[in-house]
Length: 208
Length: 270
Image (spheres, rainbow over the protein chains, first blue to last red):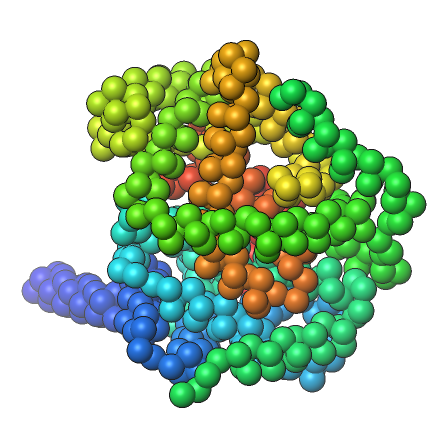
């Protein structure tokens, strides 16, 4: 019975397809999973009060490297200056920017006292970009702080490209700040100010 | 007295602005960079920076130390009670703006909050209403003007009061003159209550932001420019969350992503 055989083959093929698709689906973490995991890992790694400051900054830098698309963020932060920067200037900026951001966040995580990070929902912008809505639940009865993270998927790996806390985007704020510096003293002026800042921040943290 | 004090405050800024009107910040020559620079819309930047510097000094010697003492001496539950009382006192202003924006749902919620918190919440000390399904929402005349389509205008820094713009400064003045509690105290010769309320409000707000501001100050290269951007983003987010209809279903009733001002983040795309 040709018809039956064809049908059976079709059914087997379909079942196989469903299995494969299911497996692929189970493998790929969702944008929400990625952001929740990042938040949990940050709280776990960075909030220990006995951690020396320089170790906390080191961990924060690793977290930024793993979870953020630093090249894309750097390009955004430099804005119209990106195209005017040499490859060396871009590389140096990305490195210094990581140091500055890591110090900022490490300082905030150090003050942590039991808050929790909770992903709420997400909204796909396209098949590989999503905005994830989360909140920081406070312990003192104050209303939760909204967090919004934009994430991009590349080769099945998610990376953050923007983070907004309480409506304020960190890359956007830095873009405005640095553009103000560069309008006066150019890319070189910004880089030398950032070098001095990085040095000052590193000197201020006792390594114990 | 009330009028004169506010006028004096704004007048100080206006005077400084007039004196230094010629001193505009220099823009870059490159057209694209110039566009980025002009998007800041800060025509009296040198004046603003001077007032910002003055505010930083006042903060350093007066406001921040007071906030640290306040936080160190008054236990957290008491501070939360103070915050709740201050918020409850602002209910008439919140209600007026809900109504001016035609948002009757929120107006109802504001009335319910005021009634519940003033009675069950013991003169506003406890925010019982939030637990009963009437959460607080931010609201001021600046929001209302924005909802009427009035733009923020150029950036200005007010002495003591900090970052603002003509729209929000007008809103601040409107609130100062129309607040029923302040008017009542003023008309019964108890201006000190008005000043105490204003002072405690400022110190409490400062106390809630000590770490955040410290970290920002410590890691920024141009603190003035960072604060300018922060203020605009915060206002845009607040105003958007006070709109009656939300474009995107945000779970928090705030913080949705649609850009609503020149300052809304343009995200890096690949």
